[in-house]
Amino acid sequence: MIEKLKKKYKIGLVLSGGGAKAAYQIGVLKSFKRYGLYEAISSVSGTSAGALNVGLFLQDDLELAQKIWMNTTKSEILNFKYRNLKRAYLCSLDGIKDMLNDKNIDYKKMSESKVKSYITYCIKDKHIFDLKTIYYQLNGSSIEPLKEVFTASCRIPFIYERLYIENKVCLDGAVGNNIPIDPVYKDGCDLIFVIHFDRSYPINYKLYKNAKIIEIVPQNIPTGFLNDIFSIQQNQIVDRINEGYKDGERMINSLFDENVDCVKKQKLRNNFTIDSITNKFNNMIMK
Image (cartoon, rainbow, N blue to C red):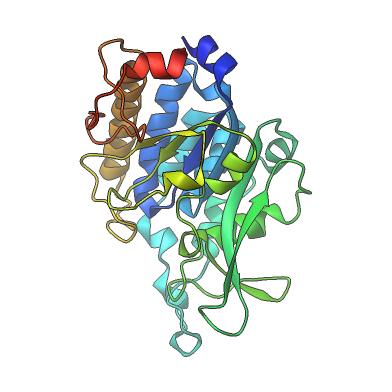
C-alpha cells in the first residue's frame, strides 16, 4: 500500500511548534517508521520544537530522538538564573543550545540529506510587529549557520535572551507560522501530513490547491500553543511519545481501511473520524 502511495503522491511532513508537547511527534514518526511511511517523505518542515524534530527526523535515529526528549529537564530549558529583566528576558538560551549540541544533532548529515527540509524562524526590525518569516532550507546549507538557525526557531520572545542573525533580532518561528505547510507545498508535495496541537487552528485549504492535507492532532494532550509547553517531566514525555505512536498507527490503519469514509477536507482528527461522507477514503487516496 505504501508503495502505491509513493507512486501516486509526493509526500510531505509538517511538524508544528508546541514546546514539550512536541515529544508526541516522535511517537507519530515511530509509527511512520514501522509501517514504511517514514522513508516515503520527500520534504519536511517544522517550527520551534517541531524544528528540533525535523533535525531528529533527518538523522533517522528515533531511539536517539526519544532519548534526547526523555533526558531533557525543565531546569535546563528554563534557566532563570540568567534572567535579565532590564533586557526583557527571563532565561538564557544555554539549555536550548545544549539540547542542539553536536552529540544530539548531526548537522553534517542534515546538510547532506536528500530530503528537502526547512525550519521556520522570524526576524524583526525596530518594531515587534515588523516581522518577516524565514523558511530556512537545511539540506545543501553550510554547517556553520545551522545551530543558530535552530536556536532562533526555538527562541520564544520575552522568555529567552535575544539572538541576532545578521544583526536582526530573531524570534520563535511559531510567531510567524506555527504550521509551516508552505515550503513543502512549494516543493510539489500533494499529500501532506501535519502534526500539530491546536484543534482550533484554521488551516486554509484553499491555499494548497490539489493537495490532500491530513492533520494529526492529539486527543489527550492540551492543545493550543501555550498550554503545557514547559511540562517536561519524564513520565509526561513517555506518555506523549506513546500516544503519538498509537495515533499514528491508527491514522495509517484508517488510511488503508476500505471501510473508512472520506472527508472533503481530508482531515483525520481526534479518533480520525470523518465528518462528510462522499467516497471511500481509501479509494480517494489510492486510485
